[in-house]
Length: 185
Image 1 (tube, rainbow, N blue to C red):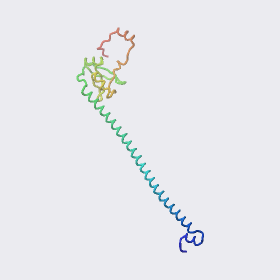
Image 2 (image 1 turned 45 degrees about the vertical axis):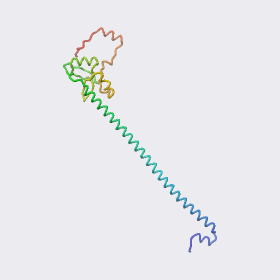
Image 3 (image 1 turned 120 degrees about the vertical axis):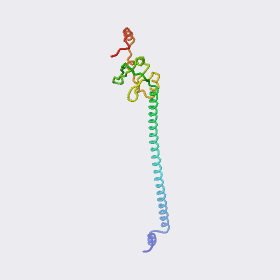
Image 4 (image 1 turned 45 degrees about the horizontal axis):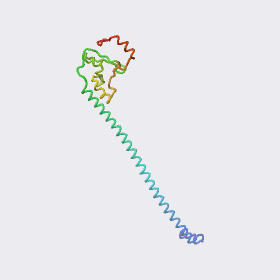
């Protein structure tokens, strides 16, 4: 029993030389095609890997951009707060303390400041305003309201009396009655 299967088939007469060579060529072509397919699969796998890597890099870049934008927003807020603090500190009124108690509404609560007569007049004429500062209140001139409002409008304590407007008829009627400025409750 020597020889390959082809040799044995030739001897038995089932296969001739021509068919044997044709079968060998087909077998070689199939082997080449398998090798080519393996190479293509390797390229596909490599292409898939590069695509996944590129996608991961893009996602990381997007996250980095978002984080950078958040940091920039935080820095901008911090800068606005620092500017606001500097504006209020450098322009706050000093020496306004006095014997007169000035009551004002801050949101839903009533607060008091002890002020002198000139400061009380400025507050009632809307020339001086109250702002929240360092867990308390301080006074600033009306010219600074625009600068303060650009940075943070929530620190300004609005005068509630100015917002309640009367109709012209009511104003004419109430103008007959004089209200003293030194009225203390």
